[in-house]
Length: 444
Image 1: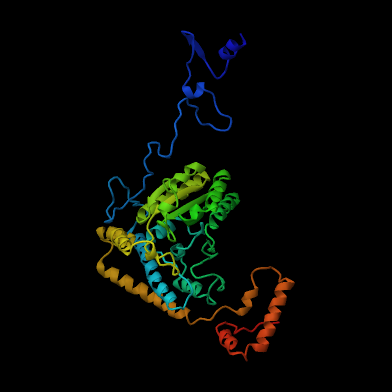
Image 2 (image 1 turned 90 degrees about the vertical axis):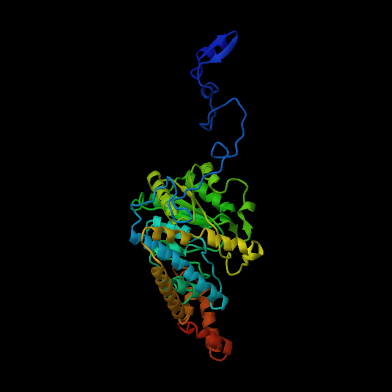
């Protein structure tokens, strides 16, 4: 009796009996009840899954232009923001990156700077992203995003100052080359340890959300490679930005290699895009060699961040043409011909140039003039930077504490004493002190 009553008057179930069997008149998921910690429907058939697409296919990649610069069938060129003037700005910034890379890579090989990392092959991924952001969005970069700074007005002279660590460097020569930072340009200083910027970006995004003046106006945008996404910090950042919702835009540059480790050995699943839905994050995969596709995807991702107040993940598929850094020889782990083929078959700069030429916005004469002008500008900045002195030696003891503590004061006074005693009589020190702006004149 109790059993029949519990079935008859259950608010969740409505049943009738047919030939001795209890049958439900509700949908299967409703009739089987619910689970206490999820809205997942309940089913009676055992089924495993290993794809976020539902049918087992790979996540698609968004593209606007094909390899010949022609819009693919069904693609929409963002006409509203692609004028001839804007396209020229995109192209000039894309061409500036390899011009800088060619010269500074060789400068490092000459021993004039200690380290360098190029952006070869990733020009569209970087410049397209930069063009889609607001200039006052907070950027937390990895290593290859100097193009974002250049797009925002960071000068070639300042690039050189950072790489040479001279007294015009806002970081006062304390960082390795290519570890840029600029408060003016909302570009947070780069850190060498891998992936540390990812959870930091989630915190920055949350801070923006709590700021009445910047809420619904700015996002925190974090760049990282697919290798960095193998670090625990990636998951910590995604988890933080999804459970404490914040306008944090995750831009993953999947360039195929984490130094010498190919992406095929980094993960087995459908790359990084498959991870986004696991954190409840809107996700898209985009052709990173198509500057218009990158710009459109990042712009839409930014819009979703602001309107929803939640994180978005954009996976940018590209190829690292250059070596990982000046400390790497990539031909030890990949074929030279593979790289040459990539440079010829799917060059992001060539693709966009062909698009511009098809619209009558560019020609061979302008191409030669641009390359010549950019090379002259970079060489002039290089020649100037190598003549400038290092920051004052006094800066060794500044900027860490609001008030100088006793132990730092003791160290400064000890160094001042040593310089006074040996600075002008010991030749190695006498020569070295000449490179500093203050020539090592410390106050005791």
